[in-house]
Length: 263
Image 1: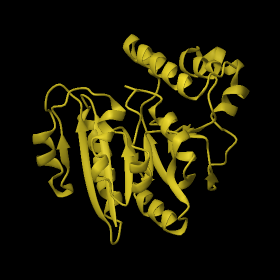
Image 2 (image 1 turned 60 degrees about the vertical axis):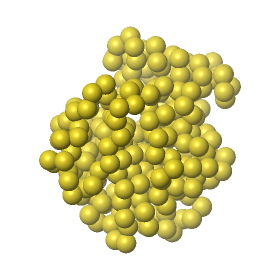
Image 3 (image 1 turned 120 degrees about the horizontal axis):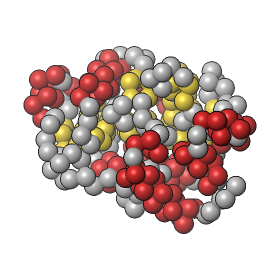
């Protein structure tokens, strides 16, 4: 079996990326009868990874694609679409995998051939549970979650918990969540290829929402709690004006494509 892994970076923090790759190395080491192909697509304006990867991760035989400029998250992921394996992992550069995460994931997929996309259990770097599965978002949900101050979010806690499926147990398999996060998406390769990967219309944000909805039309999606990750990221509104603009632009593309929901 061939497992392909794609990590898209942009001016990466090497300390954070090192933790991701070290965890990937440890998780891969537990896989039997599985060949692994890792590609890093670096959208940075200059090459800061080639020498570092040769020195630190030569054993992983990572293939680096760079020089294309900042083409966006989805388009960069799609650069490997012709070479995805039997299974294909879309992985963020700020994710640390549990040592048995890939082992558990592959075993589950062997047992459940109807599952074409798998999503993990996640906590943040603060140890607090993250909710990677979500229902179809209303504009109000996105505004509250992304831009409202903490006190206001507390007033709408019940609504936000419903949106992010907080009632879903973190100790049992859950089938067919409507939307899953792009920080870790483990596909059957044929599903990812047949869907043509991510919609390149999105530069950043919502491309995972889009792909989740399209994937659900052709396969089943599963949340698997024995696949555990630590995930940084999030908080687009706190990253500055450019990220807010990209978030709004991508939300417009998403709602134009799938239908507007106000509240």
